[in-house]
Length: 365
Ligand code: GDP
Image (tube, rainbow, N blue to C red; front, side, top):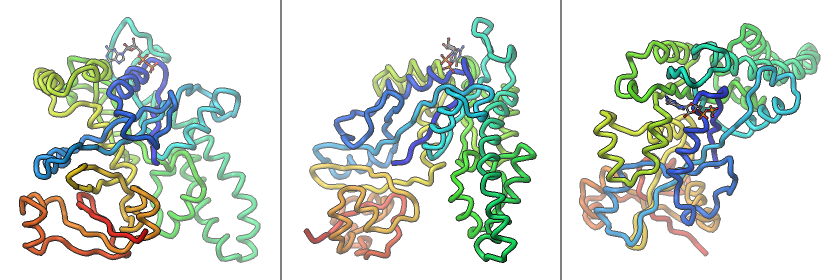
């Protein structure tokens, strides 16, 4: 399954946030396939639609879908030089599908900052530079080999060489690969290079307790947003300290606490949703009397593949998927009514599953 890695310089609030993630942790009994690794935190994906479906169907149980965050410790200046901890840091980043970078935007005289001052753009650039240098090394290794082949007019090599040249230029100007525009064809080549700076990035601005309701007043946050917009990345604003407190509360208390603080949605919920979107993930539902359940799939997946997420037999023996959109089902009020209104479709193996589809798979055993 896809995972987002959490990175950040020391003392930015990374551990505080990761602790909140593991505290809020999903009930692991529901997710036996998930990794048991102290560096992986599994959270349930908040989804109001699941509550509505539960009210409609009255199942014995309701199971949200889950999402994994990986804690990636140990960023140090010079990581790309490939020594010890630095090397480990980069190889951990290589294994994740998206990066959430925690950036310190809170002031607290008691907590020292590694650079001696609060400067989120400087912090971001320290980490990004290490990733850029590592990518540049990857590119340079390929560059010479591909250049030779391209000179011999090898068609594939010519195409790759164009891509490598564009990437080299950007990286040498200290710009991440994700900021470069490529055609769809070229994008395939870029993917094959497994670059660190082409992974989608989410900046997590960590602000003080008293600023979280009004983050636009924080100058640091403004700068982070500008920086992110320039490279086409997203930003969310949280207060890690508050998240750690919220994670210990029951659902009802949590709602009250958030209202008192003047926040519509907890930072952790925002983080989960933003990471989910960043990874191109979406949710379909199964809704039976035994169980109403949300399932994560990758956008663009066809019905058999999506069925395979539940069980490989569903994919192998796939016949059809009875499908109704969440909106149509809620509007109809019940599965029976949805069927009467002709809203339940029988989809075949080429159907591209949509976010919010409520599905019932038919398969051969
Ligand atoms: P890490 O080194 O990035 O993992 O940082 P930690 O999570 O250990 O946080 C470093 C220090 O900053 C700890 O003393 C935290 O309590 C404090 N801290 C983290 N987030 C916040 C925050 O949002 N506000 C304030 N005031 N302190 C925070």
